[in-house]
Length: 119
Image (cartoon, rainbow, N blue to C red):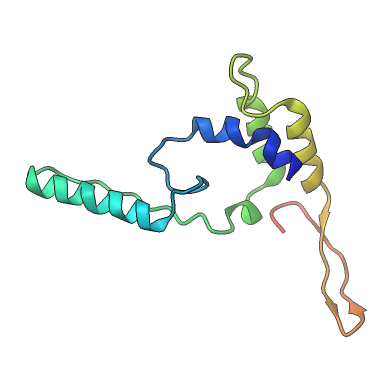
């Protein structure tokens, strides 16, 4: 939670206010209401509506971590508005470097392969 507290405000301030994910007090019901209002307005004004839905479920688990952190570091080089400080970014990167997992079942453990993409 310490890392989240260190960077949450900077990241959330850069999100579009209409983005529904990762924002306190902006859940599915409010997002659905906003979509319905947009559709109602478009219908009343005979205008087109373009909608894009992205299901990014488990996206971080499938992405190439080193590539992602490389891009985050490049984005973070804006001295006027860094996304997160370099120490926090380094801490996140270290958390996902050399990720390993294994299964424990009835006292037995599986092998521990190293993962370079996701978990």
